[in-house]
Amino acid sequence: MDTPTTAASPLTPETDRVVAAMLGLAIGDALGAPIVGWPPDRIVERLGIVDRYPDLDRLPGLYTARTQQALAIQDTLLEEGSFDPLGLAARLVQLSKQLHQKWPIYGAYRDASRGFREAVDRLAAGVPWDKAGSLSAANDPAVRVAPLALWSRDHRVVLFRDDVVHSALPTHRDPRAVAGAMAVGYALVHLVNLPSAGSFDPRGFLRAVTEFTADAEAYIARSFWPADSRLPRDAAHDLTTILKRADGWLGSTLPATLDSITRAARPLGDGKVRANSAFVAASVPTALLILARSAAHPRQAVIDAVNVGGDAAGIGALVGALVGALHGMRAFPAEWLNELQNVEALRGRAIALAEGTGLPTEAPRLPRMEAALTELEMPRLRERRHVERKEDADDH
Image (cartoon, rainbow, N blue to C red):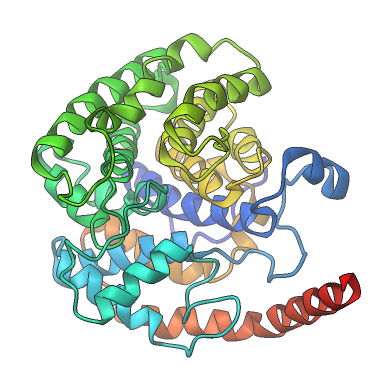
């Protein structure tokens, strides 16, 4: 494996793992972003295998709104010294207003879902942060929980579980989305606190995450069930319904594992759910099982995650964060780090998160930093839109 070249100075082992988790999130997101929505056979036909940043219709190494959401949580922690949902809501709105709305982005957000955009609109209109979220079971809160979990890594997750819930509610009020954030938050704390990567026990890890998530789901259903939810009460346990079976799938091939997750998750979703969907009860188990299967081979774990297709960016981000928390910076090849957009700014923020030093004075403010990247990407977006309009005209 290549040696990363972005490190300016040696990091302590603990800081190294926190930084790697945050950079891993952005790396997995950026690797998968250009192929979101692609089925695996299309990936194979067009690209063979994605093991570097594809140069398609977006800047190579450019992460999406999932990483941007994580950065908003991270900046809230760094600037305020604790988690504040009002601060998160304000930062999400500030970022949305940095650019005028242009196709196919919303403000400075890249590839944000409709539900997320609508929630930010409600926040901007003054809807309280705990009421603005969409009733969506997407995995955005599970992806963006990483900085909050890593910030609080010295504590039992149960002690900051309300912060995890509050980190989800501004955009997602579906109890399943909140449970996904709980599960991933626990998994990251578990991994970053292991003595070494060699002490990782795949079955013990899956069982521990499942046990914690079951308790978390009961707590969410008891304390945070939305009054306007149309879900049956047993939907509160959708995630553990899948996770309880994960241990039995661990010895299967990856395609067989994905098929098993699809069959188990489809009745809980809209009938079209697959293991690679953004539906949290599918994508979170997929990410956890990919990690558990390939924990000794972190680069391969990220490649596997991205090449499942579908929500390649979200699942890639989840697995990237998990392997970074387990292995540290050695998990990632030099080219993944060196070619990641904004890597030095992301690294500086991650070191500050690990060391609790506050936002670095030289760090660019999030809205300006992200708007600059989006402006840089705009020529590619305009070209893509031009091609799509021409194809539509030809079809008619």
